[in-house]
Length: 524
Image (cartoon, rainbow, N blue to C red; front, top):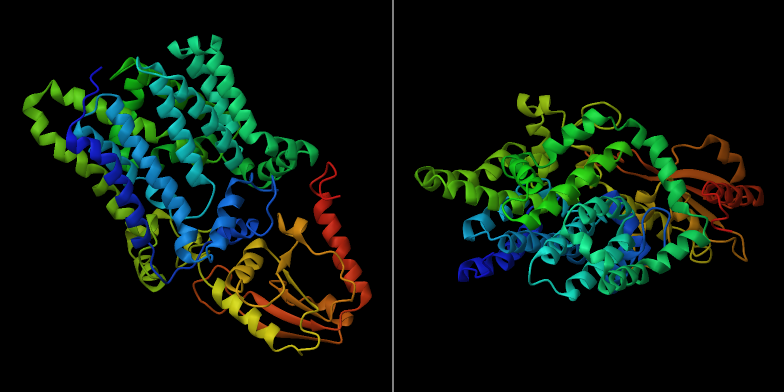
């Protein structure tokens, strides 16, 4: 297999990485704020631990660095765009390793830029590193089959998988899919080598503290998955799962589908076969377990590389068509993404999105249908990026209006993690108690009863709790989200003064009930 690369081609991976990083910041309209999930993940940085109820701790380390650097918008988005940039770098490098010329590398990189990954890397979530980890692992598998493989590639693979476990537990499904890729390809020879078991040990060493945290806390991951199955995964149908597989990377369909077929046959190079087997095994596992559609995203980038090199070899056998089809194939991913661009990337303001929603083409797409089954002016994810700073500022004003002598004795309790996270994020440089909740990991961060009873309660998102009025000396509404496009529009802030001891005891009991839901002694 030839390994000499053109001078221009050797620079393409870096060029694509730079383009991916730079365009990410240009793709978000400044009218949008952070997404509700991002506020939760940022709060991990204030509560460093080896595990959390929702995800492993790698994201918390990134959050700690982000907050240490001031927590600004750039640093929040830096991480997903960094992992996205590194992923497209690996995609183009993989095309090179498979013998792809400059055109094939361009095609592989364009498939990545103009598919579902254009949206994925705009949000500060564990999915960004997940895709990078899976793609890098696949690249290293290919390298291990090639003649110039070295033990360091195996050690890098072990460390990558260890970090992937620290990022998201879907890595276990990926590892299960790795087994047939190992046994059904020449990679099986590695199983008898000392380097393989050293690499496995490195992976366990990296993720071991989190695995121990899981065991010592009663395996909260198991309970989190049970809740997901009851509330979300139970609604994932097999037909919808496979339909989404075609739609998520639809702009690159003409590349990854033949890439899959070619990989399973050991084309364009024998080492590509592990890529095809890994995809088939991974998708079958997710199908059986009713995994969400986007759990499979990490299996696609390597197929872009294989498919691009397959097209290169196919067109080389048809020189009369080659000159015409090469630019067409490069343009197809962009042209297919273009109609759905407003719903892939939040580049248009909320008012512009509302006007687009009246266009028949977008009305029929169902892109603005929320979980409630109703059509709204914006997609649900976009609406989840609005109204948060308004909420945080109004909570701050309500807190500042309290008497100086009793202001510090205030409990801020929110209905969900988005509200609590947003209040904490936007008030991070202000002298104000941290907002709390019983939702998710916030239940584990809820403060113990203070030495002196609370004098004020700020209740966020509780509606108008009539049953609480008798427990306060006074109870009144002090704020509300008014942004018409926000999913949290109408979320209220109520202030209760001089809460009774009975109410404070009730709050602590509710906290214990929230923790008890995670069984196995977690939180005790």
